[in-house]
Image (tube, rainbow, N blue to C red):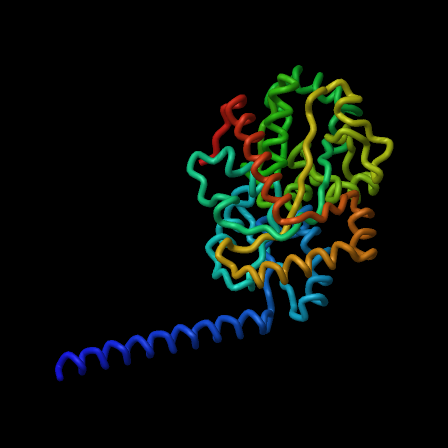
Length: 332
């Protein structure tokens, strides 16, 4: 009798467990099916006004329309993108926190960090890349140089006296400037900010002298005469700055840099939700208005698959780790 009673109890508990598991699966399925049912946030790991912020505000209205819920841009600047990126990595993987990651925050920063706080390949799942933007060397108009050759000559004559602004320690703008110093064999004094926006404000105010900035954020100030461009850091000239030579044309070889962006989610996000976000991003990038907006900014739309994003991140991590070994630069 006791044996039969025990068998009954075990069987009852097993049926309860299976019923609970079934209900849990139904709840999860229902949650995914209803996604999104509230506002989403798109974390930008830099201050307002910079290239990454502008990119987010260019795509967020389209994402809002496509997903049917408001996509709020959430600026979390600092430490060259590390602070905001780490916040995104540790956010609940429910699809309501997106990251506008960049080459600087996802590959440059981890490659130079002595103790990386996140792994872009482990902690995030990609959707699509969004845009690619070449960098440009711009200076305050008071600096007595008109091209990259004169700039290098000035730096050699006054080592450490010219102040270089950046979007933060470990940002793409910072380490591009460090690489330039190695290649040109010159010395600049680094002044980090919490994003390109505040860095450009101080540069125009004369508190610093130069910045290796994205074309998208500098072009308006260049056209207004507030900043002077010396050279674009790309293989070909930018269509929004057609009269500005490349670094190679200026005599500085093997020196190219750009900033690309993409939309990512925490790695444990359900695949169905990742696919929905991916489809929404691709739809927005296919819109003529989006492409024209990026073109006006000097950026190139680079729609891609998640697999292509992963390969690019992996390749860039290898590249920047080699640069780290060459320069010896580390980030605490």
